[in-house]
Each structure stands twice: as structure tokens, then as C-alpha cells.
Amino acid sequence: MKNTFLRQILISFIIIFIVSCIQKEAENKKIEHISTNISLQKLSLVSSDSLSFKITYSNPNNFNALLLFKDDENILSKTEIIQDTTEIVYQKVFFPNDLESISARLVHSEIENEVFSFDIPKLINQNITIVSDNQSIFKKTLSKNKLFEIEELKVNNFIKYDFTESDILILEDINFYSDYLIEAIQKFILSKKKLIIFMTPNLNQSIFLSQTLSFPEIKAVRGTSKNQYFEILEKSDGDSILKNNSQAKIFKFIDVKNFDNNIDYSLSTNDPLIIKKNILGSNTIFITTLLKDDWVNESFNDFIYDIFLDFIYDEIVINE
Image (cartoon, rainbow, N blue to C red):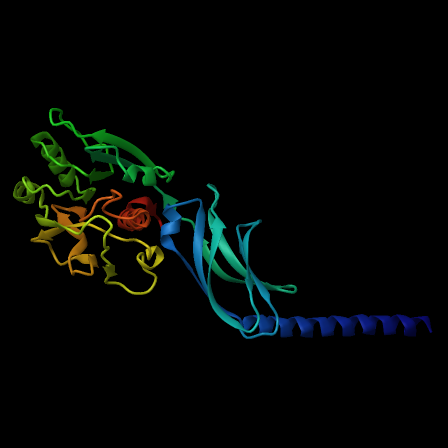
């Protein structure tokens, strides 16, 4: 009698176990019906303490699930995957200094499936020199980034410059280029490092700078302060820098000539906004407007910051 009772208990446990396995397998099949596509917004890797991910998902089930971003042990963030929904969402994930990798796991009930993983690449700090007639406006934006060591130099026509220790050189709002400054820029260009130039309406030196530093020649300044703005146009489609900075506006710009066709961003007048050139091995961008508030609105600073990060991305990120 006792053996019969024990046998019945054992059979009951076996049945419960089998039913549990069947239910778990059914739940696993349901969660497998959820499709996810996760991509890193690459500029977030070099711009802040959090990573931004674009998540496209489709959940045909009648239950919600969770998408967990985790390191080896800790949950870093959660995104709810809504039932019977197809959606695109963006998720920020805190990015601690010692983080080596991150994974995304789809979770429902007791089921947990890894659907994405990403190894954090090594990031290299950059020494940036900004040369300007006045206090740099761009420095205020760059200073928020812990990857940048910034030196700001005021233009002095009677001193010699040395940019050899700089990784990146920014020329911002310079009205007169002395021989000393041009010589130092030429030496920097020959080191094949990256150069960013905010052009100024320097008509007197325009031809000279075109001959010595391959500047586009200046024709005129177009636009009037804040009475109208020019729309920014972009060649590329999809997840663009411009799309994320759609409020950026330009009131005035420098009309140029003898520029190359490597124009990713132009204006509604078909004039170039950002010109990319390779000058003796140095990748260079010319920006045909200034960051002054009578030339652009405040949102333009964020736009040009993203342009800058995209331009120098390969200098910062290695072993990706």
C-alpha cells in the first residue's frame, strides 16, 4: 500500500515536470516569435556616459516581454516589448568606465534569450588645439566630453606656433592669418592629422589662403541676421546626423567658389555648408558659417558637434 502511494506521488511529480517542460517549450516558442533588431548609435560611444541603441521590434504575442541590457552581472536598463506591437524605440544605457561588453536579453516568465551583444572598443583621448581671434564658442561644447584635452590659443600675429603635439586642430573665427600661423598650419597638415576650419569672410586674404592652405575662395556673405534662415540639406538617407538635429538653422553663410564636389551637407540655395578635402594627406573639413548667434541658432551647435564627432570617430575608436 505504501509503495503504491509513493509510486502515485512519483508519477504526479513526473506529470508536473512534463507539463512544466511542455509549457516552458511553448513559452520559448512564443518568445522566439518576437523579432528584434538592435543597433548602436555610434556617436553615443564617443559623446557621453551612456550608449544609445535603436531597437526595432515586432511582438505578435498576447503578452508583454522585457528587453534587458546587461553586463556580466548587472541589469543596466530595461525596455518593455509591448504585446501585439511593431515599433521603433531608442534606449539609453549607462556606460561605466570599466564596461567591457554589453548584451541584450529578451525575457518573459522564466525564459531568457540573448538577442544582441556588443564588445566595448578601446577609446583614445584626443589632444585638441583651438585657434581663434576671440574666446572659442566651440570649446564650450567640446569641454563636456571627457575624451578631449583642449588647449585654446588666441591669435597673435607676432608669435610662432607649434601644433605638433595636437591630434586635432580647429581654426575658429580667424580674420587674419599671419605668416607664422600659416607656416604652423602647413606643418600640421604634413603630419596628416585632422583639421577643422570655420571660415570667416576674410576677402582680403581669400586668394592667398586658397594658394597656401587650399581654402575655398570667398565670393560674399549671404543672408541677414535672423530675418530668414536657410534649410540644411543632406546627401545620405536613413539614420542621419541631420535627422537628429532637425532644429538647426543658419541665418548667414559664406558663399565660396573653387570647392570640390565632396559635399555631404549643403543649403537650400545649393551652396555648400560642409566641404571635405584631403590636403596633402590631412583630412580637412571647411564649415561655411560661424557659431555666432547672428549666424546660426543654438541647435546648430549640437549639429556641428555631431558632425565633428563623426569626422574624428576613427581617431577615437580602435579595435572595434
